[in-house]
Length: 371
Image (tube, rainbow, N blue to C red; front, side, top):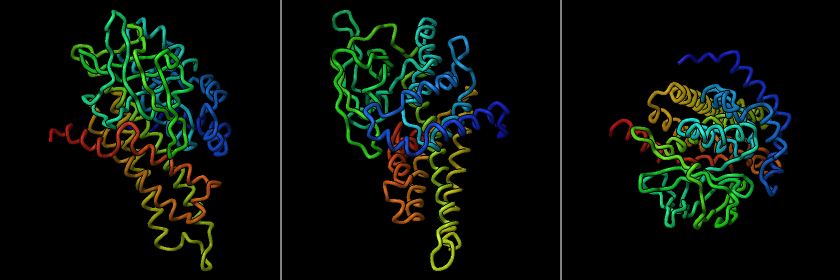
């Protein structure tokens, strides 16, 4: 892996940083916590104009091309600014699922709408068991009267009230599959959940929800499961986002340690504070580079399970440590809702378990090592 980013990647990174600094300040993130939609549709449209929804999608389907590493660099900048919205679910999970496993008809019909910002999607995976293993899926795709329908209950579905589609992981007689469901179909009911990150999450119940055969992704013979690949891409994309968020916490904490004076000297001059800042740097850099490696491995089409799950497990553990260090450095100030720290730490707890927690991904690493 070449750790030097290309000129195009550096430009993408800087453009994203400048754009998000202006369009997604921390005050906007805080405002979205009480917004009915949960994210800014105006900002969503501006990101579509920049072509961000097309990263990783071939130009023939309205995309920008590029690799998952390009997408990871963009997501890292989004994480720094805690960008709200179903970007990961729409791009890394849904769009790339159809790029990888969709038919030509599906690609031509769906991808231009996603890359144009006209079709927002949410990944409906987690079920009451809380288990991320595909073998634990209870939601089903069946054909009782000649028409396909989805039945089941999904938890923690983000932005289920405002997206256009739900990408549901379901079991079938032929194994796990993905069903792209109209989020406002008859038979869908939603219950808003009160969550720690204060973002829009829902319990979604699907009862005999009609779905078209043209919106199903099944496992092809000799090919990996689209459902497992979607979960893996979500975990990898979130790892990049988390690395950005943790980097922002570290920067805030180090700046504060340099400025806050106690006992006649900056608190950063005390060894205990220096060690905390140093440990944060070790975690942030570790998260960045193991995530870059996983994104590069995925982009190259190499076996990725071991490094991808290692990245998500490391990022989940690091998020907890960095959140703890950040609060200890800021002290009481870091618990004030007017301060950015609670926004990062509350979301950090959510990201720890989203797309599989550290325990799940360590098990994946162990299996990849044939243990």
